[in-house]
Image 1: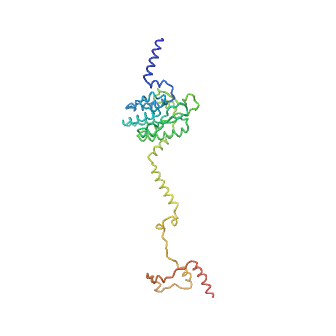
Image 2: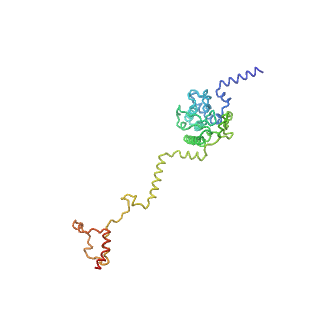
Length: 325
C-alpha cells in the first residue's frame, strides 16, 4: 500500500513538473480561469504562431511572480498580458478570423489578478503593441479599486468600438466585465470571484457572476459615434451658431448688416419751409417749374441750400408774428 501510494505521488509530481499549466491549475489563484471560453479562443490563435514561446494565455492574467514560469521570452511580467493578446490578434488577422480577433481583444481587456482586493494591476509601458486595436485596449481593474466603475465602463465602450472595427459583434465587449466589488479587508484576496478551469464556458458566465459595465444601448451609441470626428462636430457647431445668429438679428439690419445689404432709402432732401408756406401760395404751374434742373455749374450754385430743422422751426413760428405787425 505504501509503495503504491509513493508511486502515485511520484507520478503526479512528474506531471506537475512537466507542465507549468498543470501546476498552475492545482493552485488557488482567484480568477484567471473565470473567462475560460475567451482563453480557449486565444489559445487557438496563439498556437498558430508563438515566437515568444508563451506557455499559455492564462499566465498573462496572473501576477508577475506566478506568471514568470509561463511568460517565455517576454521579460516584463506586466507586459505578458498585452503581448499574448497582440500575438493572438496578429495570427487571427492573418487568418481572416473575426472570432479570433474578437477573442484577442476581449482577452486584452480582462482583469489581471492582484494580491489584494481593491488593488489595481500595473499597466504595460515597456512594450508597444504592434496592432493599434490591441494598443487601444487596457485591462479591467479590480471593481473595488478607486473609480473602477467609470474606468471599466470606458474600457468596455472602447473595446466595443475596436470589435466593431474588425467586423465583430460589439455587444461581445460586455463579456470582458468582472465581478461585483469585494471587501477591502478580505484576507483571501478572492473577493466575489470564481476560478474553475474545468468550466469550458467560464464560471463567471455559468454562475451568473458577471457584472456588465454598460448597457446594450450604451454599446450601440458608442459604436455609432465612432465615425464622428472632432472636425465634423466643430463644423456642425459653427453652422448651428450661424443659424441662431441669423434668427436673433432679424429686424436689426441698420445696426448689424453692412451698408451694401441694408434696405435702400431715399436720400433726396425735403424742403420743409416750402411746405409751411403752401397755405398762402398756390402751387406753381409754370413751364419753368416743370423744366428739369440743369446740370451746369451755374445752375447748381443757384440752388438754395435747404434750411436746417432749427431754422425752419424759427421761420414757421416767426412768420405768423410778422404778419401781425
